[in-house]
Length: 116
Length: 111
Image (cartoon, rainbow over all chains, first blue to last red; front, side, top):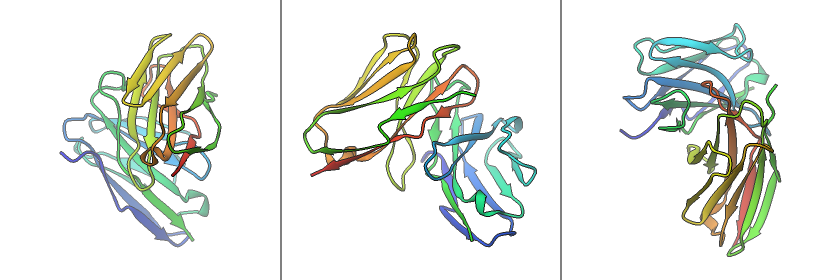
């Protein structure tokens, strides 16, 4: 297992277009998290899954955002009608336990979205 | 609202010198503090997870301390090397599934 992988690494899109990102977690990890980092800020929590169930969504996740983890393996994050404010690094992480204390969180290298 | 603050925002250190930076977090309902190193174009790499007041952890030339009563953690790097150049992030959790990150300290080692 090569860790958490995210695809694509970079995405440039025009305002108003839809985009979808994919995250493949470490295979035995049942928890999967999405974070977003905008310029000058630390990563901010967006949502997380335990297996295929989406258990929490941040208020940052507007109606234009949707995340899925259909079979409890990979996850997708879709942004509809992108806005310039959506430009950010989108990070995915996975974990064996929820608190990260015993097994930690493993992050992917992120998808950088630029909306023009 | 949980605020995690890191200082300084950025730091330039001569190769071979030692350095340290600070993470401040809410002292109430503390559960764990995480430190990550994030190099450009790579994944954030976990350095330490700390849970107990007074904890000290070490990994090679990097060490960290934790004071949960006053709400701060220090990260120390001894004998800085060019490969230490990265952004160092701390993240706080009060036992739920979410990490609350600081804005990071960007460290540049000058050869």
